[in-house]
Length: 132
Image (cartoon, rainbow, N blue to C red; front, side):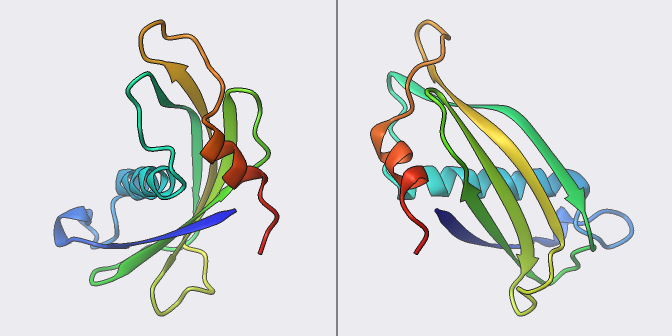
């Protein structure tokens, strides 16, 4: 399953050279990840929720203002409590060019005990659904 999120770049997201600040790419990924979880029905975190266990990004091209980032989050094969995923970041109007790409792993954790727990069914079903 691939989820697409569009996020406008703000002027304040730029570094001194006029590029999107490197740390802001992670914020884009975070927003895309949270929207994806909500969209698949895994956004209720009263008893358990997602913990980002790992993330890495490779920067390919700078993003300049004004722009709208397009973040594609693709879910991998889930484990019992973990879910790998990849990111591909492009820019609206130039969506065939990869500006950054990365990968990460979510672990579902019981909010009371801190122990890992089974992924919620809607998230597992989204990850295991055949590509359309």
